[in-house]
Image 1 (cartoon, rainbow, N blue to C red):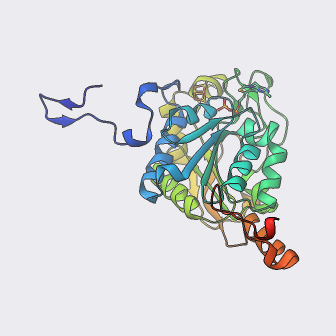
Image 2 (image 1 turned 180 degrees about the horizontal axis):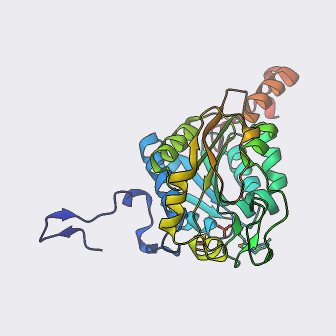
Length: 300
Ligand SMILES: Cc1ncc(C[n+]2csc(CCOP(=O)(O)OP(=O)(O)O)c2C)c(N)n1
Ligand code: SF4
């Protein structure tokens, strides 16, 4: 790759080169897709967080969103569809000092992986979820998903979906998530700040990103280009930090509530387990701190 434009004297390196596998760029995402923007927000947040690269791991599932794991210069795992959260949970339990981030789609997290999602939130597992909600199963050609708004058309809903979609912030909030936010692919600065907060938040954090999918969702619904979708987000997003998540339902092409809805402290799964076991088995319990650091007394 050219490093310096000799005519203009400009540095042509990508500003996130340290965090991106440049040998795999250009990526597979379509022009106007919100996934690349979200990955940019995520890596910018990682850079700002000061967390060393070796201490962060990224886990993704399958689908267009799942491809993110392959582009980051961090330990990353492209796991099976719907199983990113249990994989992330295992990583976190095996090495509690790791910051573990799940990057996955609405189909992955809320359909096939829905069961894992609610239990990780209930346990306040200390992992961070970035959910690309493009309202459909994009990579497989546009089937409707649990977040598809009523009336939206997709390949498996040719006359429009008649299922009531999940209100995602309300779902994860009611299950026990301790950090919940929603932004769109237009809100790059706010999204980056939220991801940064989530990276430092102890406990289960969930950020829903309403993400443009011009190739499948927008085309099926005649919503225009990626730019048209961003204009829609600009004109129809209402920022309501602290809003009651019950009020965050999404209706087809109507006003969108975005913001940081939940930010609270509660003991994480690891904290609770450590405290409970310390009380139960007393001195014999030494909390596991990660590979080569944990040591149990009395050989137990
Ligand atoms: C166990 C399993 N079931 C189904 C599939 C097929 N599959 C691949 S991607 C995908 C949809 C992905 O949708 P989503 O998670 O919303 O991600 P997007 O492509 O929209 O980013 C499906 C069903 C699979 N790979 N594995
Ligand atoms: S199909 Fe949709 S979600 Fe997938 S890369 Fe293209 S625009 Fe993005």
